[in-house]
Image 1 (tube, rainbow, N blue to C red):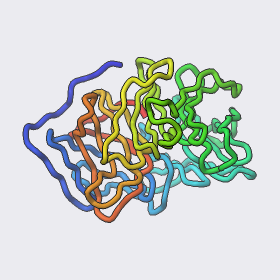
Image 2: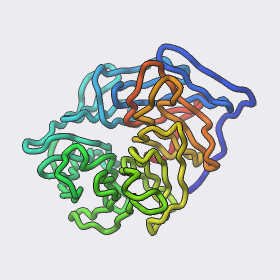
Image 3: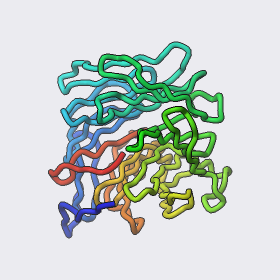
Image 4: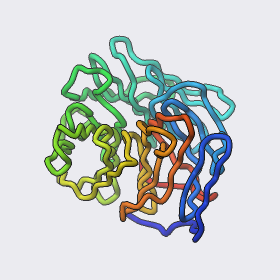
Length: 302
């Protein structure tokens, strides 16, 4: 992966506190970001709330045009910044939940549905379904079938299945072409509940995954072996995440307990926590999209 140098660095500790939470970084890192979960909002670099939908959500991203694509439990909406809805998809009859949605380069929207027919869909801007890929979550427990699925550059789909303890790569025909197991002995096996939540294919072919109930962030090699693991007492149900251009990982902490634990944190390759976001009397960040870092656009994979 191409790694760029940090855009900004300070030698003093910086703490920003404003209308929602605080950002803490010994090296002066400050992000603006979208969070979804128990709160759906864009938070500025000084923790000001820049935009908010008063509803719980599952997934979300800020699109290049500035609109916000938000996944709710039973629908997906694209909002303009003044709250006009310009894309809307409702859960199909017979299924129970939507876990994720991602805007594709061709303008279609990839959506993962859970229920009697767990599947990955591609929906045109006009609302027409053009691709349907059945998936194999190995459970009838609707809520635990799929999490943050993503489409790959080769046209396949990378899908985390929690109770299968597996990240599966599917062809457009629904064939499983690769399986990354998350219940490996070196990760503690199934007893550690290493349920895969996020699966991000890195430029070098490795896969970054947040293993939610296992309280770990892991990078797997191309063959599915464990290449890198981060875990600490600060890890609490890591859910969504982003692999930044500088090689750092931002991970949500959905199960943060008490004001001492971060709701999101950034970890470098040395397994050092270099940034934290905390909000008092709050928990439940499901996904994060880092938008800027110290005033400059942030890239990366998510």
